[in-house]
Length: 504
Ligand code: AMP
Image 1: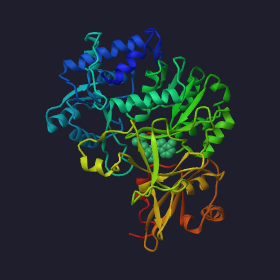
Image 2 (image 1 turned 45 degrees about the horizontal axis):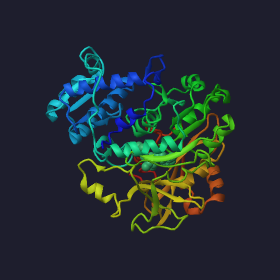
Image 3 (image 1 turned 30 degrees about the horizontal axis):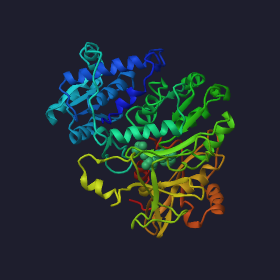
Image 4 (image 1 turned 90 degrees about the horizontal axis):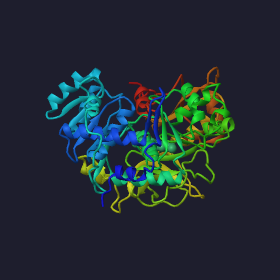
């Protein structure tokens, strides 16, 4: 039996007139339109020579057409390879050289650069996502029906390059089963029905906006209110029409920063979901006080899809990412030895299940190094399981600070700093220190109009934390550097302040 994700999607469609997607400009697409347009794009891909298993790399703006192209790749049995629109040509050159796609789809303004790159790398065709000679024009002229190509459970559906906040990006190979099983679990766990309308303000080159949001909608027959880019004020206008929102913590901060954001706007909402970066307890509580909704925080990553989620019906606890999802096995091990740790101890989070990817593209050694012999994937996230089975995330292994031989988990210090009313957010990092090896350092952004000096923050922390955990330096800044998914760029901060303790 074929395991193509698109066949699972097709099998759920009971009414072709049911709404699938509406843009902010009022363009509407039904499930019937989705079937026709994805078929046209699939036929266009075939006419360009795409065969089963070929990679199709796409660096395109967020649009309904880009989504239909993703679905067309599934239908044609191709491997979809989305690229962040923020990547420079140098970065793109690395991805294309590594993945060797047969076809590359880009924005018209960079077509010449892509053509030059393709000529240098050899063998790949270039098409644009707009323009008279672009892919949409070719799709428009193509047949409106297409027989979805059968795929096996462990055939690749997509390769997503990891966001690379630490080290070099690796291509995570995701199978049809990885994506289908996770979307079904999320649909059931979060109780999606065909009546739901998901407010979609996420990018679609990343697992969150592409798989978590879109696949869950498609496998529940619900619909998308599709914002081509996140804008808090515009989102307020759309909110009364939505029932579910998925966002990164930055989205929730930005909503809360708007005076006009009122509880009444969420009158039809049943669920706000957050993920991709830690949601602070303060944001969780403030959102709940303002709207009456407890944000549901979940945890996942490109390689594993979603691993844990706070419950839909049970308590959604601020500062935790909830228990493992059904079918996902999760355990905590000592970082260096892999020894399993008792409940309550901090170690590296390891997961196993149908959600976990097949490996890194053309990196068998890297893949082998990140799996235990019994098949558990070593996530690199540090955390612990509390006495109620909820997972708490304490940081990434690369963020772990070792100062004077003692381990400091940034999340604990950040939570203590963020609890100060003057503070908007913070990032705790370790910097080279001649005496301690690493010196604990906090980079802190204050709320508008607030002041608090380094000494005052240290005094508060010294009452709550062991002395070795109290930052040796606290630097106030206007804002912290983040990527599009709301992840703080600690690597950039470590680079910027590398000579803070040891003068160059
Ligand atoms: P990505 O592959 O870009 O989705 O990044 C995955 C990483 O984001 C994970 O390994 C975690 O470090 C982080 N992450 C995702 N969700 C959460 C969350 N709810 N809380 C804390 N960190 C998270």
